[in-house]
Image 1 (spheres, rainbow, N blue to C red):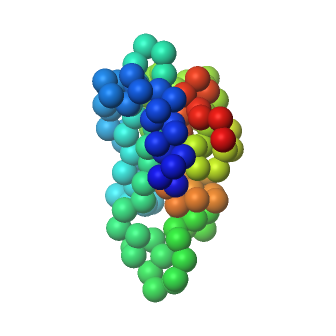
Image 2: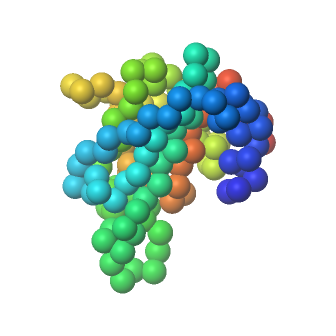
Length: 130
């Protein structure tokens, strides 16, 4: 996890060193259990999403908070710069395409955390080749 995050940072030093910071709003049943923010500049975008208050999501279950049964309708509201982008999930290598909603582009937490319990999404130019 750390290696891939550092590779993404190295691939786009300018973005991570001086890109603008934007906290992202979350919606849905478990919005309070999701922390998300974006870093962006004129050329690149990175979105970080992490679960919080995990015990409220999985209770006594000894498992990570993955999938739709945990996250339900919870989603991250994205900045306008993310509309129409295909992002790369740094930890899984999977492409991620934001969905549309009346309030703009969104990412479903169930999709973000389908396979891995944290997400670092980068625009294609930023994506490290692993």
